[in-house]
Length: 182
Image 1: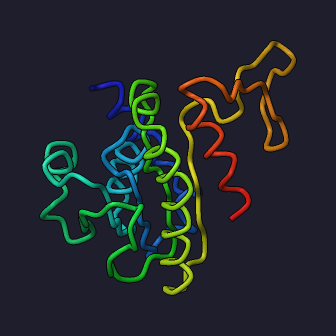
Image 2: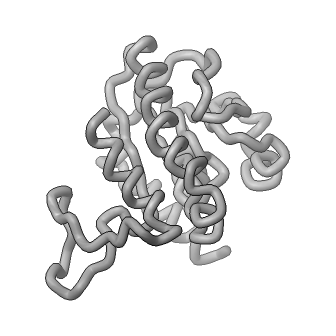
């Protein structure tokens, strides 16, 4: 934990990175997941940024983000991004990090995984469009580009990689790719 906190403080101390976020509100879906929690922790270290954290499970949110629940710059909303997003107030930036990310999850619930990546994205974009959103970020922590067969050192947005759409795991990367058409 000490190394994690050390890294967060180092990034938080990079003032030039935070200038554009000062006074902004960032909504994070999937706030209790790996990327969502890390981003929440990082943003909460900076005194000028408000965070709206979304997740399906308030108990899990209290366990992972409980230290922020009484903070004036933090607001938690329990919701499922597959449904219409409830009123949360204005957000300048939305970071969509909600998705099943464990291989067992997306193998057992491929439809749920696809839904959160496609319908969740649409619902968050609709919310943002009706609330004056300025930026939207859709994140992925897993294999959106498929398997690297050694033909690329780095992946860019145009790299298609190799995906076997006949595997139980295919719903995750295919639905992450699909969001580009929204």
